[in-house]
Image (cartoon, rainbow, N blue to C red; front, side, top):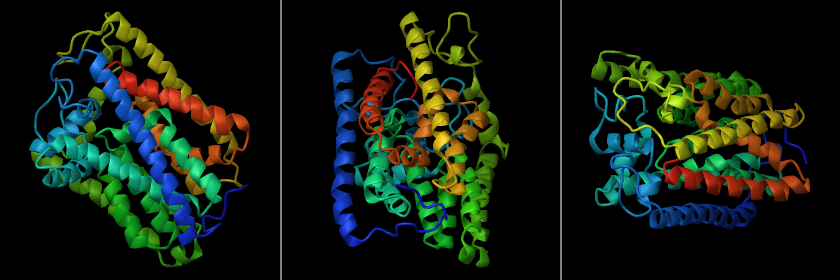
Length: 392
């Protein structure tokens, strides 16, 4: 089993019979992983004391667990727009890009104004769409069996917890995969629009222009049509948001400059007794239990980075087109640029070429042991996130 290294259709677009085979399996994978997160959330909410008031966005059952951490900002923007000053402690909301809040606000029209439910529905619907889109992309390079295994590794990964939360990860995954599928099917306008939308979802979206450019260069038809011109929509989208932030704060790059507060050392963010909290920090210092769990979580994050780096051993030219090598490298670049290594598990979850590499391995430990370990780690990550022990 080998991946097509030419950057074009190695196995072809999925046919109607292949879709009839794939869609029920994709649906089963989607439902099973959603039920896993819902079950963990239900157990947490019935057995654990709720966190300090104000640390989560919703108090509704299940939604309380699915709207933790960064969800407070996205849903706050969806509910009342951006603010020029801090909204939680020293943190401002204009570091969060607007597409997800816009979609949550639109979806709230169908949830009787319930922004919390709308945000969770948008995130999970985007994840379902991402699975379908990734299958359509993966089947162009893998056999249908390997393509389905790649989706399983994606959905079961420890960082896949974020795909169920009111976070941008699932939307970003959908748009990124859609942009590459559009490039491979020679639809440059759609590719450029999806790139722009990905850039408006989270800052690393603009970096997708690099592997997309490489992919276009590998295709003589797209190269002759100068399809790369459509990639300019990505920077234009960022420029548009920068103008908005500048009108709000007086600083065109305010969304970038404000990122520094999230780059505080981990021992400050977990409330290490010897740390000096940043100005405006009002959260209580963490308990010894949370500090210990945070160090355990760091081991998980560090292990995820090492495991992903190990997978690069199998990124040989005969197995992986250069464009997808770059897609796998982007999480490392974005983590380094933002100083967000504590979110490594979540950042790496959207790098689907790693799942392609795993799907190409037929050994028993990959097909049996890795999924079991992934499920156990995802369940543990969800429990710790829902109990406010670690940041997903």
